[in-house]
Image (cartoon, rainbow, N blue to C red; front, side, top):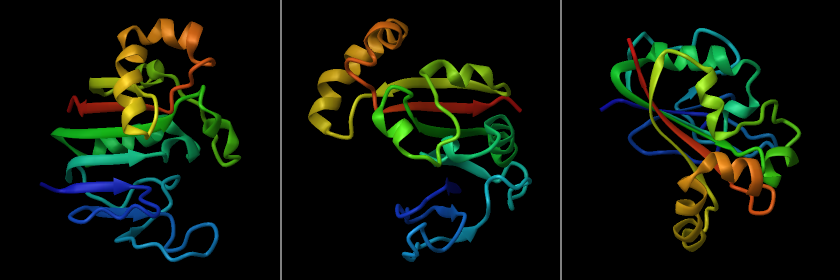
Length: 167
């Protein structure tokens, strides 16, 4: 299985092709990467239908054109492959804290893009395992009610989408 990790930063995954914009972070600290490429530059340096699994965590919100990025992910992912995208939820303080964020997402934001089947979309409350176990079922039970009425009282941390290309 050929796997691609886009925007890997300090999280290098063994057995994956790890891509980031540079071999150094914004503070000059060395990153371990396999491929360097600016994800705002198209096309990405991969052949069509190259990957079985593409992972993009906390990267899409930094890029100029999410629609073009999604199209590029669809181009490089095999027909039966999986694309997993994780972005900060708009209600989380980290979403607005980082001045390099250009876009803010709700769980339904993925519905504005085309060319894939949504396999799953869910909110994650926290990186803390206990809080996730307690709150993820509640906020995902009816996420639209949660996002409309409760998300600023109990902010979700992330939107997590799993997609399957249609072509």
